[in-house]
Length: 295
Image 1 (spheres, helix red, strand yellow):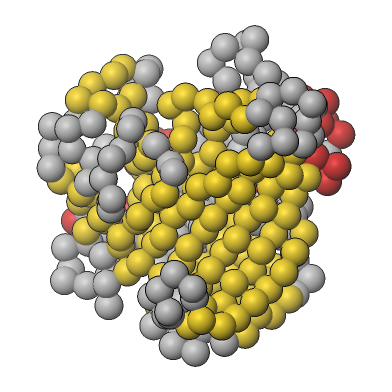
Image 2 (image 1 turned 180 degrees about the vertical axis):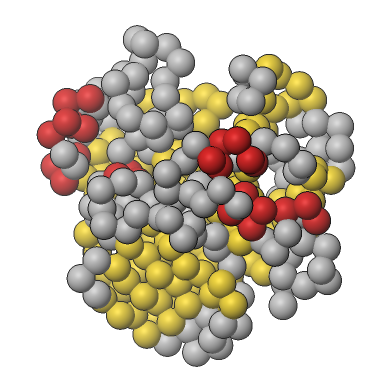
């Protein structure tokens, strides 16, 4: 097991043939390989020079999901999806050894971001004092991403948080998502219409952009219908799940996404975005997800 610190990214390597790559810009996980096979989607048109949020991998959403609905919200002046994914983080620590939670061999990198590290424009748009601590932990078959939010301001603030995970799939027409049935969702494609999910298996044959609320399931499964390679997502202290695929028309409208790549990805994103999380001065919040794959 090893950690390689490069100028603009960190590479975690596990002896089993698994690896992960994290760019300092956005602390964005851009690669997760298990048994040598890539499991995350990264657009071949993704911009990796720090001028734009990275299209693919696991971008971090904080403190605003999308754009604020209410112009009076404190985060209303922030750009789409907030601060974290368009700021350059620092490496706080790297470790390797045996995981306390499950006894697996694990390699870990921890990243930090504070209000003093973001651009002046972002500080003016959201003038809160905060600290983010983001930990990426790799084992032979799992990737854990954990975020801690600390309020270092004199006043409370509200925030959204989301792990915007892009999974690589061989054929979107064969994918089904389990673990979200009987949940209320907001359909952003249909201008915020709310409905109840009646399907046990969610399939995708058109543009999908839904926020499933109050997800009580211990595990969400992305079934590739190939007998192997299925993804398992286990959230902790995260209430909602977003399912997204841009489909044909929206793909053509994105400069950093190839027209045909919608066939090769699906986003299943755990977070809390239907409502804001309130955080008092001097307090902290933690949430995480564990991704695993069948091999």
